[in-house]
Length: 452
Image 1 (cartoon, helix red, strand yellow):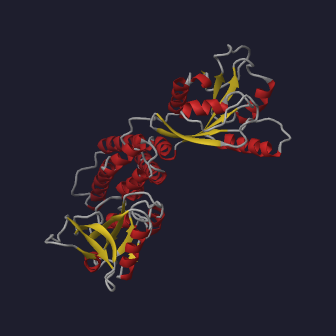
Image 2 (cartoon, rainbow, N blue to C red; image 1 turned 60 degrees about the vertical axis):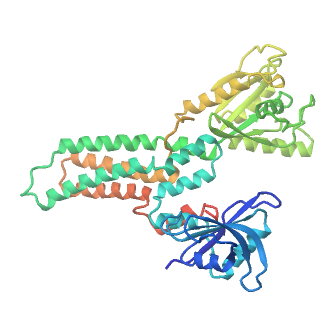
């Protein structure tokens, strides 16, 4: 009999949100709901039906909220346990009062990710699907959401499961030859080598999605860097289509790092408009300049901005020397006022803009995506993308499989084959959750929200 857990399953914002959901899962869920929920008329209490009624304190009979009740009996529920949901009015007070009543009636507050952990432990989800739920909830772009949804639908689990099955079949063939050498024909080493080649090719293909998967999950941090008054804030405003940064003709207007969140080609991008980097006696501006330097050093990509009329000046060179260890795109702004002349610094790409006229923004976005693709990280059309944990396990599987190939090439006995083959099978099983430790599960599900 499972312990009954309860949690608020929706984001609660003061005075906002029309509905708040309190979710219970476990053997006492229905009993608790029957103590708290009262409904008029002849409504039928059965699985997967919505009831209308009132939540009342079981002792005082005080009405807490007017609500809907959804009952989902095992195994046809998210956790494959009895699940009950109270759909209350939104806000803070009502849902917190209902949650407190559930706890007073014997439920306990759920741990982060515990509902999904139970779904995994009860066989409703494998571990890749559970992790995809977390990715879907935290998706920062439509592309990230689609990739997470593909994982939830098994597009990662299916090829991993096939690879593991192939390795298990090979292991069975090898162990049969060890145990019954005199009764079976010799092992077809050429066929085994061909199978290993196919498995390794598929493992390599899936591993290649790790970087692009991380990009979709965490996004790209882009810093707009340059000396004062070259149009960095105008560039941010034109790009974000909002007045996030103050724009004047006075140098040093931006005193701190201004941030904007964008999505380009399916990739979440955090854009940082930095204070113009220069020597100054203004103490506040000094702080801003130092923060700008730190932002540039932590950025995945620097948009080094100069103005067309001045070209690449000595002051630009001093700033460039501080940031050119990062991937860098040169942005020549204010091309509506003058053509750029003279020497230009080395950059991955060069983009010309007139930010005050909203010109060149599409070209800039294309340059960023081309820079991403040049790093062999594709920004779109992903049908799967693995995370760091899955990549680590898959890397161990690849190393083990390559070692088996070396063992075969060295003509070592069959017993040696099985050692690394078992290691590969175990690593693939870890990805699916078929062979995973409790500490790994704790680390994965601790990142979930409490109500999931």
